[in-house]
Amino acid sequence: MAVQSGVEKTLSVQTGGSYLIEIPVRWGDPDALNHVNNTVYFRYMEEARVQCARACNIGAPGSGRDIVLAHVTCDFLRPILWPATVRVDTKLVKVGRSSVEFEVEMSVKGEEGVCARSRNVIVGVDPSTGRPVPWTEAELEGLQRVFAS
Image (cartoon, rainbow, N blue to C red; front, side):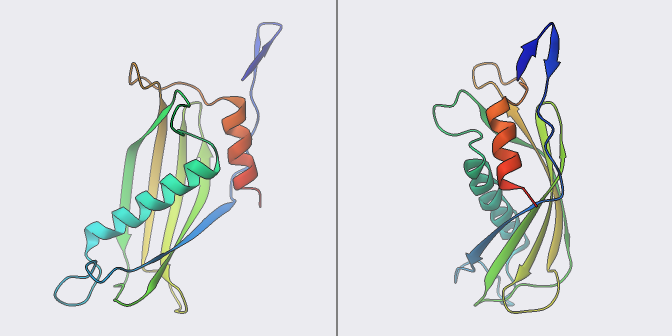
C-alpha cells in the first residue's frame, strides 16, 4: 500500500475469479461406508487455501506475515467415494483490508454436481503480535493475478 499526499492508495482487486486444484482421494480418507469422512473435506479446503496463498505470495515463509483461518462453513451435498480425484474450486468473493473471503465448491473429477459448498475467510496477521495487518500492494497484486477472470 502506498501513501501519497496523506491519502492511502489501495489497489482494487476484482472478485469472481477462480483458483482450481485437484487432490486424489487417499485410501484412508473414507469411513467404513467408503464415504470420505466429513473432516477430510476441511483438509481438502486447507490444501486449496495454502496452495492459493502460495500462488498469491501471501504468508510465504520469511514474508513477515502469517495467514489464519477466521471462519469456515461447509454444506455437505453428496458423498465423495474412494477412488476419486477431488476438484476444489476456490472463488474470490471479497477482499477486505486484512481479510479475504472465498467461496469453495468441491466436486469429483469426471462426475456431475457439487459435493460440498463452503465459505472461508482468512486474515493476514503479524506473526509477532498476532494482530491483523493490511495487505501489501504486492499481495493484492498477487490476488489480482491469480484470480484474474
